[in-house]
Length: 120
Length: 120
Image 1 (tube, rainbow over the protein chains, first blue to last red):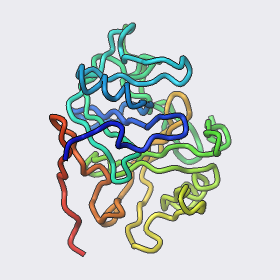
Image 2: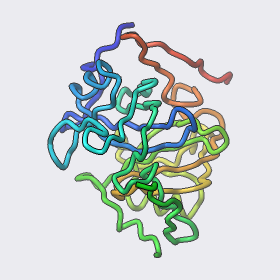
Image 3: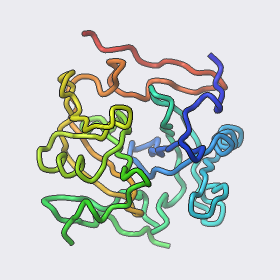
Image 4: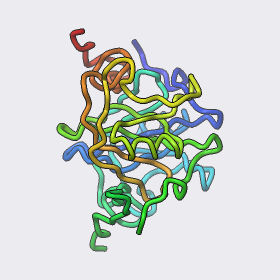
């Protein structure tokens, strides 16, 4: 069956959540949003491009930071309303310069920071 | 810093996306939604409880199917608008009776089903 980005289920803002997972380690790096065109760009270029809800603009990951994500594998879920990408991540996925955005652990009712920013 | 579910950033419907990852294998099993109360229930009981957008009701994962998710670890992302859970998944995470909801691979413009439903 041929894949059509328009066949996915987007929310009221035309967006779909996209999870980026480190292809090498399985670590979940981040979750951000795509619209149909950013997904099409991601597939066409092999460089992950999200849609920035704060800037209301395409967000070619790493365009300014150099921390690009190369798409290794793309999956869609059973409801066609979420994407899972295996990626090769250069440097940090997170804007705090940490490898993953999920560096805050909740344990016994407390928040604990479990990783440091990468050396810059 | 003590953790308060009310401190997270919920969307206009009071929901936050929650990613469930298999604690043992690192496989991403599913993504669904929580509100503050379903997160509080998840933490209190150790059994993952989502909010069903289609039924507009709490969704104690596995309540009818037996395919429960036990919470092993909870993380929040840098923007406090996404959750990542390490879970122990009994049976299938997906309503199609597949282990993961992400069984559809997009490759060279084609969709390919990469896993079968578990034996019932």
